[in-house]
Image (cartoon, rainbow, N blue to C red; front, top):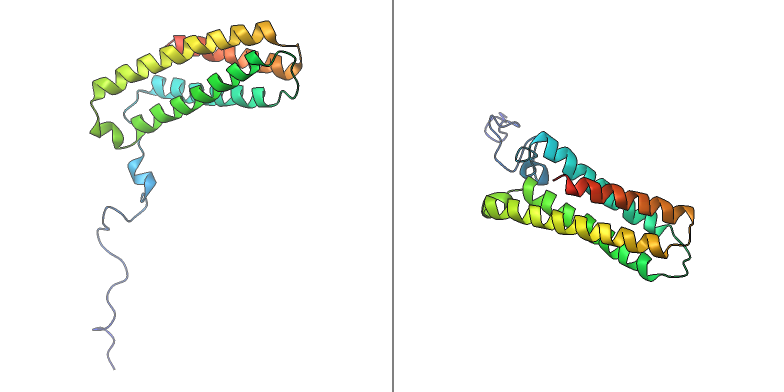
Amino acid sequence: MENRAVYGPTTEAAPGAGRGALSGLAACFTLGRLPKSQRVLKGLQLLLSLLAFICEEVVFECTLCGGLYFFEFVSCSAFLLSLLLLIVYCTPLYDRVDAGKVKSSDFYITLGTGCVFLLASIIFVSTHTGTSPEIAAISWGKVISRLQRRF
């Protein structure tokens, strides 16, 4: 019996949009909208804010905890806002909103986060007890606030 009528070719000449090497979320993700320097700065902003949050979480005891809690809130918020902006720039969501609004939102969010990070670092410096995790968290906070002022 001849099986040619039952079985078709197993490969397609031109796979559809949802199939192939870049499928699913990878097909929607692109870094081309950001210039290389801004990509590097956004990546550093994201990495350093996460690192500051992790360093702050290592602190197990404090006497004046208000500064520590404020620094925790600011570092976590900075990480989440940086991640949100990077997602907007790198997905098709960028095409659905006005590019000018995205860029102005990026500017004001980065400026506001940098100023509040500087304030949180100052408050944390004035209330810390001198343990090495606290000093590491403060150092990363200063680096992040300097980096965000360069945008």
